[in-house]
Image 1 (tube, one colour):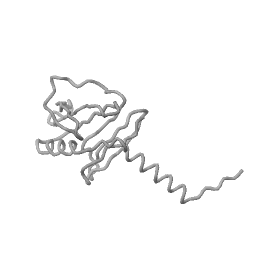
Image 2: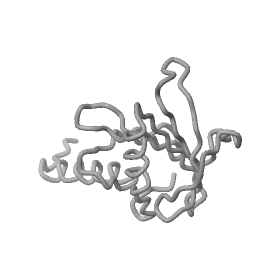
Image 3: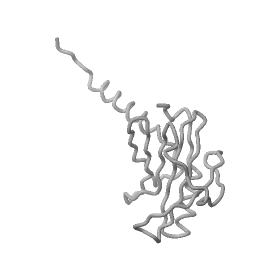
Image 4: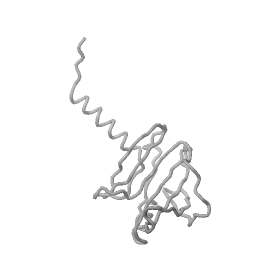
Length: 145
């Protein structure tokens, strides 16, 4: 039995599927950034990519926190999408001059969010933290896995 499919229908379904998958990452406040999104099992990895192809910061959304951040590395409070967070210092052994910051918090549906960023200067660090604090986790756009 031969099945006939409408090309416009198939293209429309492809566009809908692409739009739905792109909507799973939080909303970016910056038009110069785009998400590189990857889903692995029940984990969603969203990398904010600059126009030059470099990573500005990353976000992972998982059912449970991947690990606990060290209390001794806590730097101070912040706010992301009206949620109170604490920023923590991290380090890269292979790049000692790079400033690393990360935070973890829970969404209203119980999923865990881990955000990390790396900066080469204080100015870049402040700019990245400002951008991250402006992202929005819209519950209607995020799929629960």
